[in-house]
Image (tube, rainbow, N blue to C red):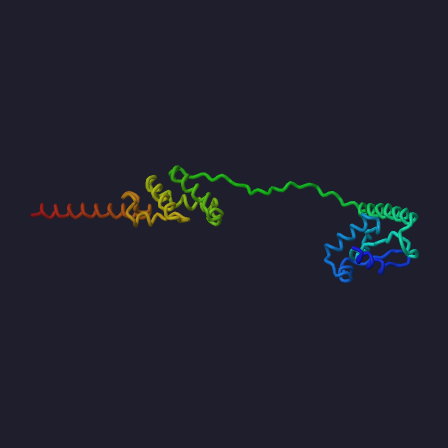
Length: 243
């Protein structure tokens, strides 16, 4: 601490004022930064020096101003007048420190208050209604599975468009087959509905193994085949009667 006080005295002018930086004091004394700061505070508490924080000029913060609180022209002990003067300097430095900390630059113009606009941060969620052909229990299981999936991508892609496509795939199936198809999707961790896999595994009922278009084509085929067979039988009966 004494070596630090001597270093400050070497930097001081004839009035006992100096303003070396902390890094400069560390280099001159060989002390660590924390030690220099601690010893400076000890010198201030004991009345040897006073510290004044100098505000910056816009280019950065200036180093502190240190005032030695004894006469530079009198060697030996500190006189009573010097002690009184040092106390006065300490009070003035505290006042200046308080002023430098409380003064704030005033704005040139008051900013205009912008009209508050309420922003809707939440996405509007439209309610999706399933068609009556869809099994309600199967759809509840599928919706819960997709909405609470562990993968974020699976949850985010469960939009109204995806729900509508899933309903289109489930509608041609019977209610039991819809439940089986949804159970198969959940059990295998799939994202979509695959009725073809249900039919290929033999889990679909016989009445719904074909799509509506295939069912209509088969019905027309069976009808024409029956009409052809009846015509052949009628022609054969006429031939027999001729003999």
